[in-house]
Amino acid sequence: MIERMESPSDVLAVRVGGAVSEEDVDLLVTWMDEGLAAHPVLHVYAEVNELTGVDPGGLVHGFSRGAHLLTCLRRFGRVGIASEQRWVRALARLESAVLPGISYRVVGPRDREATFAWVRTSED
Image (cartoon, rainbow, N blue to C red; front, top):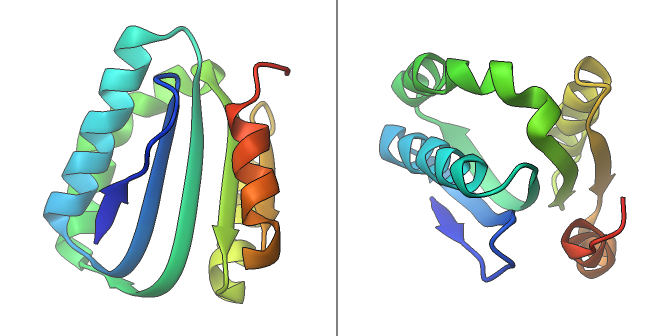
């Protein structure tokens, strides 16, 4: 399940939990495309809690549908990931190491509000 959170238009903010379906992944890619079409830089915030899995078909579909986003990596600004799940934070830290041009903050649930505020800020 993926749901959009209220945020400024240059910030894609989502809550992720439960089982993520192919439709969820498709919606996420659509939201990223819309944000990148409207803004030169898109910031991303995700609260990931009680994630139980991602549909394997959704992963394959997401990689194929979202592959074009790899050409837009310089257009992603601040990325904040807040999760109670250690394995989610570990994967997000690995992603941040692979994508060094993007500013990441990966935190536990106690720091989610400060991280969301950092993603929404106009300062780089």
